[in-house]
Image 1 (cartoon, rainbow, N blue to C red):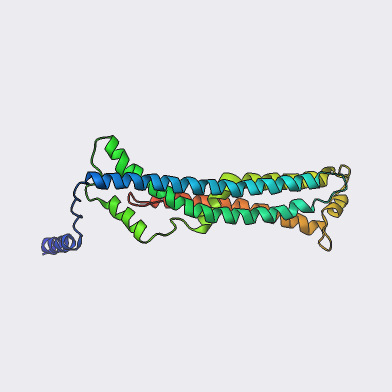
Image 2 (cartoon, rainbow, N blue to C red):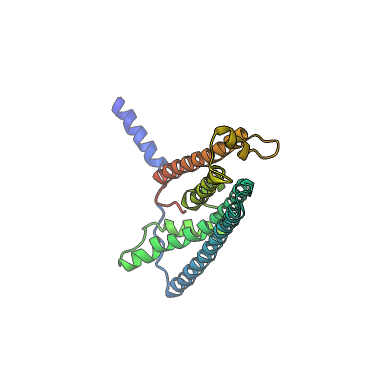
Length: 239
């Protein structure tokens, strides 16, 4: 009786399992030529958007350089520009993350063609038997979307570029407070130098610690999210 039930369940599972897609017919020379032009277009678009990423990074570096020049121009200069430039750098980081999401789309499409079309061609081996890579690429063209979230994009750009810019900004701020107009002699003197209008030096220090530790924690969290997503990613995932 138990064997009969087991056999019946196996038969039901076999009926539920979907059948693999039939193999697609080989491409004609015209279709291969069209894909070649498509690949060139995707590489061109990814290159353009990669250049736009460099622009926002350059803006961040330039504004930080201006703030450093103003702050260290004299012993009496205020360290406030270094505080304000940190906020501006975060704005540039968000802009760059938005651009990175678009760049990731074009990069993923070009990479998808390389791994599923050109690499098997160079190895003289056929691509996937069911042609799923073609369906995935076609679906991405018909319903284009971002392949990563804004949080993931911010985390990647933060880890690769902006963490160093923010680190320089923080070190320069505390260096300014420590040496100008004279080397620090006590904590009371440090609180006076850090104070900005009605905001006390202790509050400014607390803000700086929370600001920098927050970005460090954000970078670590998004790094773990990236690792988990890459482990779960299937062979038919783009991006």
